[in-house]
Amino acid sequence: MSKGWRKLLIWLSISIIFAVLTDWGTFTYEADGTISGNGNPGIIMLAAGWLFGIILLGSAGAVFYRLFRMKSVFSVQSLVIAVSALIVLPLSVWLEIRYVDALRVHLRGFTRDEGSVVFRFGWINQYTNNLFYNAYILAGGIALVILVAWIAALLRRKAHIQSRINSG
Image 1 (cartoon, one colour):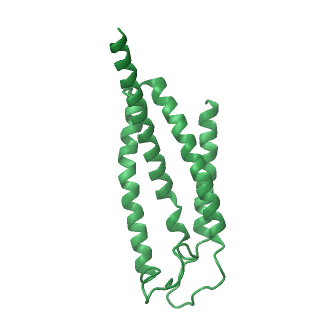
Image 2 (cartoon, helix red, strand yellow):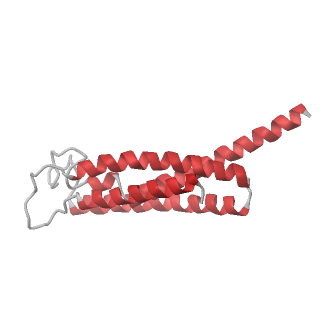
Image 3 (tube, one colour):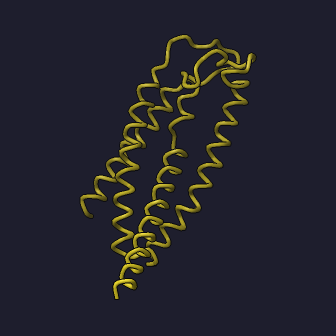
């Protein structure tokens, strides 16, 4: 396993850990309970998660672009990865939308709805941290980066072929 893949797995592991920690740091509203006023401890995990998530996506872009350039964008391995990403991206978007909607129903609305548990809170609060960083967002981000890397490698290949035709 090359150094790039090893680093990618490390960043992925750290990002997953912070997604779990963000979820743990997000309060769950109980219908018969009171609203917590204890601040937002999950915001620390959310910020760290986004930081490591961005590092993960940059690393994934570099590793997959290199893979697609070495193997050819039309190799079986490259096509399986790209098609898988093409399936995962809309699926993760759909699942995130369902997740947001389920929380909206549970909280009886969001920050602008007067009957909501989080009325007058900011968008990022102790009940909504996990909307902004979770497994669906990680999967969708990685899938998007893979597709962009595949398209970039494809465009690079086309430009290389075109330059060979023009020079020869």
